[in-house]
Each structure stands twice: as structure tokens, then as C-alpha cells.
Image (cartoon, rainbow, N blue to C red; front, top):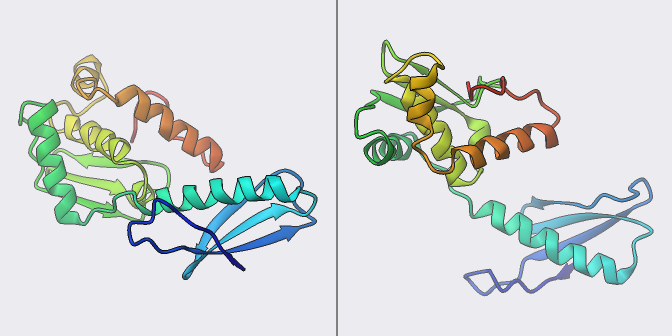
Length: 186
């Protein structure tokens, strides 16, 4: 194990880094948090120079991922209110907004009858603008239950809608999971 300086660490500390070389790896490099250290897996045949470059890159990725927001149910409800005010004229007011673990084929769902919105816990840790997009999508269902032109007109008021759709499609492909149908999030 070796320490690696991280200029982005607000505490000024250096994360402990463990580098594991694998003869089974040919080209891929990956990293993950394991307690207080970051484990970086590299191909055994990689040069030391390439290893140093990849270790810095992968440690930075892990650290950035750790800084992404995770919101409580109350945070989600407040965020939904702010997004409705900003992009939907305050017209979409859910009675409940919460994370759920049972949505593996949807990013979110809305039940207009009881004005409840549920977001897949898979969204936790994704960039806030992606979570915001899914929230706006589900909020729009409180105004238009289907996926018709009026619905998409509401969703498209969110300026990062197309970018977020692309992110979610890319995430699905990288994770080798079937994305929801391309015409909608849920």
C-alpha cells in the first residue's frame, strides 16, 4: 500500500491506496473504496508510468463519486418543490417523494391519484442534475399522466433534460442493464 496525495481532499489528508496487479486483467482498470483506503486494480503487464497515471485518475474518480449528493426523503420533497416552482410554475405538488429499492427497471414512478413520487435508489450518487431530471419527469406526471406531447412539453422545460436522458442511457449500457423504453424514464 502507498499513500497518494489528493489535492481535492478538503481535510488535506492523503487517502491510502492499495494497488493490485492482476494477470487476468488485460486492459481494464477499476477502483473502489474499501474502508479507509482506495483499491485500484490494474493489469499485471501495465508499465509503472501508466500505473501511476491510472492510479491518480481512478482515485480522483472515486473521490468525485463520494462527493455526489445523497438526499433524504425530506431533501427529495424539498428538491421536488423547488424544481416544480422553477420549471413547472409551482403547479406540480406531490404529497410524498421518497427513495425505493424495488425499482430495477425504472428510474422513477408517479401515482397521480395519491400524488406520490418514488425514485429508484439506483439514482443515489448520480449527479444532481440527473436526479433533478427524473424528479421533473415524475412531477410532470402530476400535470399530465401519460407521455403525450403536453407531458413532454413540461419535461422539456428542464434545460438539462436531453443531457440527463443520455447519461441514464449510458449508465444503463455501462452497467449492462436494460434501460427503460427510450420514450420515457419510468
